[in-house]
Length: 164
Image (cartoon, rainbow, N blue to C red; front, side):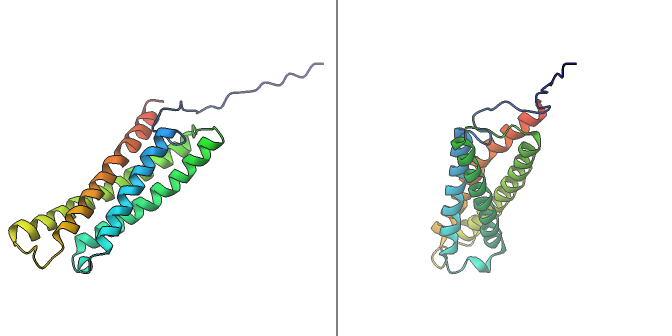
């Protein structure tokens, strides 16, 4: 009697596309997300009057979450690149897609709220002499840039899941 071993290929694997988790493109997107979020957080946190405005506190919380999420996934990408294995598991890509969707939505909404308050202070109230308008504008712009870098990650992960 002969025993035959049948090796079944994994049921749900995804092809690696640049920008996906575990690729060099994915790492570069995560690095940009992290960098812009940290700059936004640093600039906003160095102003003395940001805690007095709820939208600015929301921006600090959102970019803090974005920076932690992006840093953790950048470390995971570095590991995947070093061992030369990508994340092709549907469950992992789904987790990354959901996390990217949540963090990018929070970052975008916080940047929009901060932009509205910055315009109110600068243009409508003409009160930039007493406030840090340029710092608020810089922090808001960096938050938008972080969101702009996070969007391709979300779109690529979501598209891969939708087209499998």
